Image (cartoon, rainbow, N blue to C red; front, side, top):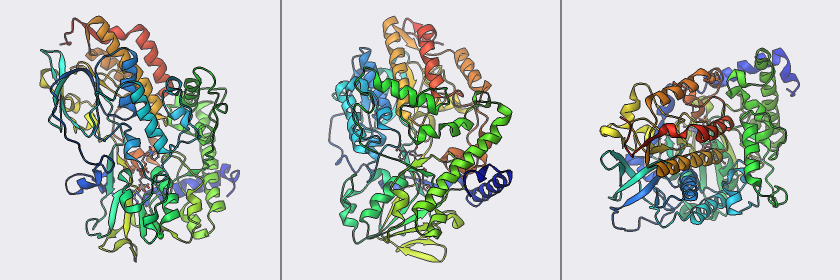
Amino acid sequence: MTNTDALSPDALAELRRRYRLERERRVRPDGARQYLAAEARFGYYAEDPYAGGKSGREPLRDTVDVVVVGGGFGGILAGARLRQRGVGRIRIVEKGGDFGGTWYWNRYPGIHCDVESHVYLPMLDETGYVPEWKYAPGEEIRRHAVRIAEKSDLCADALFSTAVTSLTWDDTCGAWTVTTDRCDEFRATYVVTATGTLTELKLPGIPGIEEFEGHTFHTSRWDYAYTGGTPQGGLTRLADKRVGVVGTGATGIQVVPALAEDAGHLYVFQRTPSTVDVRGNRRTTARDVGADRDGWARERRDNFLGIVSGEHVDDDLVADRWTSSAGLLEKLLPSFRRHGDPTAFEAAYEAADAAKMNEIRARVEQVVTDPDTAELLKPWYRYACKRPTFSDLYLQAFNRDNVTLVDTADTQGIERMTARGVVVGDTEYALDCLIFATGFSVGNSGVHSGRLPVHGRDGVPLRDAWRERGPRTLHGFTTNGFPNLIQLGGVQGAASVNFTHVLDEHAVHAAALVAAAEDRGAVIEPSREAEDAWLAVLAEHAPDHEWFHAECTPGYYNGEGRGRPNGPNAYPHGAFAFHELLKAWRETSLDEVLTPGGRART
Ligand code: NDP
């Protein structure tokens, strides 16, 4: 089918039928329960392979101004923006052995950012750093995280290989007591949580997973001692190995070409193919990106965010497949924000979507030489049902003699594992090593899940405060009953594909709150009325795109095909508008969350 054919009513009807079919054959009754957490007998999957063991240190019993939970980009940016505001003692507490968060843990071969580095790497204006590639490798991004931390003087007070185990507000002292798994117990006037969203790795609950006698690990804990090599490749120890990889999401797409290069034989176990669009990575100069002007990075970042948030933007500075496909993300906006006539919207939109997906499927046919393999690699769902991916190496890897695609859609994933390998249908695939590129459990980190217990005024647990009616916040950051607690990057704000930009705006906001509280000798805490008003804003224009997700193949975007949690938990107008709203609020209304005299609201 050509792109133009996709516009005919018959072709669209046929596509809808096919999409429904592909969804139905994949929805599993166990939904998200099909996955295993890396804990208890699977806990070793989550151990830190990069830190070289925990170094001994004495437990801390001191007092700091701000504790920041999490040393990924969210935590580092919070620290940097607080430092710019003149805050004194800032202590970042991080589970990993260094700064970096996602980019600390994920060091698999082939790792790159799939968003342009000049908009993804934060604080380029402030650090003077200009990335050399349009899409930076993971190690460069990790090093940039460390660069910001060093420039912001965040290293001396940071605690690594340390997990916060509880946060408890003490109303008498007007401070938080923080405990950790290293027996620390110290105080902080303010707490900023930056615990990330995709941090808890998950494993497929394949029957017999423990029987396998070969080697296994998850992509976010790469075992270079076993494979040899570095994130740049050279996995020489795999030369005589039969290697399997489970998962073909954004991670699988990047790791497969690197494994294909070096493995004796590579088996790719696929359940749902990704959309794999053109990447076009290339070296860039400072001139290419206009880095000779003050504020160039901020301008470029705003431009990108505007485009992917559905704003009217004249110039497209990044000009890649994210921005050229951004119109197709409009279905995720509330209907009144979409461009053009709302009644005509869906028909025109569906046709554009079909044309794009036909282009993606046509690319598979052009690149992959074996027609049967090509057929299996074609994604049959609408654009953005899953995170779009980009690669000029992935599809090409299937033209190699040492790579075999094993489709597992008919059995809804790998059926079982044996001592020797993996069983799909009638075939047992004998393997030396099986690598899980199976992603992360969403919303299972930090304070929302209760994994990190938070007790506010009168010892009330945050989980209890939110149990009946769900999360209650002002702008996603602050909650009544939990003074001086600021949550970054969580619910009731607005996300974007360029998440570091979102985190930076949140960090600026958090720093402004702390600076204002310090100025006025006040406590930060919203009233119940302010929370109600914010919930009303979220509810009034709650996005009406659940119909879209309901028709998608399963994945973490749509609760594994079973629907997403209820409640208006995101600002409906997109990240660009959210940041504008925060800025205006800081200028006019910030005092509404400050209680002078250092006493919390009762
Ligand atoms: P995903 O959750 O996106 O993908 C997991 C993969 O594992 C899917 O292909 C899934 O198939 C497959 N899978 C799970 N269980 C089984 C099973 N039993 N049998 C066979 N296959 C199975 O995880 P990723 O790590 O790929 O990506 C997670 C997120 O991380 C991305 O969405 C993105 O937000 C982020 N990321 C960002 C990158 C960047 O450059 N910015 C790079 C990499 C990741 P199915 O689809 O059928 O469920």
